Image (cartoon, rainbow, N blue to C red; front, side):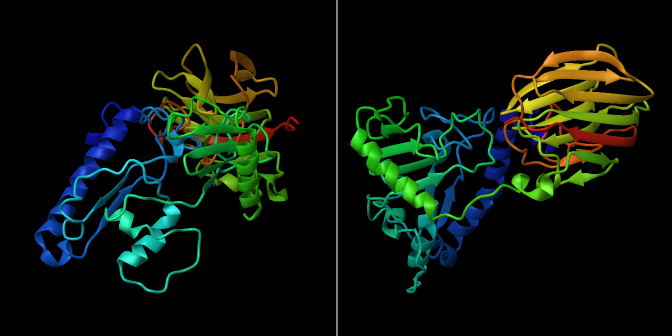
Length: 384
């Protein structure tokens, strides 16, 4: 609801989400409590799928956040509630040592539901831990693989991770750059023990690399022949999904747009979202903006004066990270991006608005009120 968005910041919106969630879930819990059949036959499990997104929430003492394999990205709360199922002595208690995983949900829930035949998979039946009858969690190693299309500065974020007991190893997919932590003593992952424990690193590296070999090969859509286009001619209202949009990774590109402002503002063209992408838009002051977002960091150049009427605008990001903004062949702004776009944006390309996650500091979709004759995107050759 609009009234819960606060000041429009990420944290303001996050607070609004939590407030609205509380309002919606409260009546459900009340209904379960008041109905004996539901109360004695319902178990509610509440969990998150990842750590906090940058700018929205905090991971406390844990390192990293959403999209990373450090504890801040993969350790989340897991709440089990069932007034008619959980023993009163266990209600309100906290287990801070048991390790659980999403892969354990299916066998555990099936056991609680009385299903005798359970499918074979990576999960472990932890139903007794869910209900507080046992304090021990998962004993088998737990594995993670970071999606290759997620944003991250260069190779600084590990591709793979494995936890075996209290030991956690993070490593690149080629086996390089190992990092080892003892989570029993260092849950914030600040003391890297890889050099001090070479044999343990070798064993855990083999374990996680062997596991990775069992997974299907991942080939990004952007790496396929279908996405080798370098010239895109677009019109207002066009939308290109990720696998059909210009492949922006580690390359320069030029956007040429013909439009009439009609004294309106909004997004002329945008591709991407809060992590990676670009946007060409007219702000509330009537000034033309060209903004590049790479690994969540934004760089923008802005025309010094408002623009009105019909124009041909060229916005360019060079392979050398140079930024140029031209209006009718006249350079009106220049700058330098912090870096080139390092990963193909997850969000689509939209002409006339920014449909998904906002690339710029505006409220999505921020539609353009003027007319757009054409938008052309030309890609340079990617850097090696």
